[in-house]
Length: 262
Image (cartoon, rainbow, N blue to C red):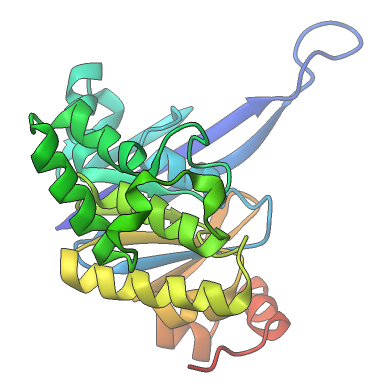
């Protein structure tokens, strides 16, 4: 059984008013997408900028509402869930954002940023929260001296590690990683990709890994879904899709970028 299921999910946005009044039309950011994400796997979602990848990722977590279709998590229909039920389900579903500079509150110390989900969702005393924060920092390769510092005191790669620690705070089952390395230098990005692979094993995570880079997705993903103009045009096991692509857009993505060496 799939952990996450999308069935005919669409998201449209109005273009504004026409010169004659009324709606000028709409843009379909996600167009009737259906896919499953199985427990323990990394599904790579790849496509060019503007293809609808990030919109689909947020729809899978119900951070934005679909125009039509249904999304289920662990057998529960998220699109029909109440606010209270969604609050409970948020523990199991988290997101790692693209921008390590904008995803952290510059006014909050690292300890407080990572502890915030614990304060909201778990009844832990301050000492227990501090222990959890130290453990999470250690898991992402940072020591406890980071706790009292502010985000601006860290490099981009270190900030992304802090964002990952925050996403892990509630021990989620499913994480959407939305272009988590695209704002980083190549060498730093490779370290983050390797960190995500290790954390997946240690925390038994399921990922939707969003990227415009086929080599990065090819390295990390179990399966790959290719998105073009709001639609999934091809999906399959990583080796099969990258060695024997069936769609012309998939072939163009594979031809456009160099291989990753490790």
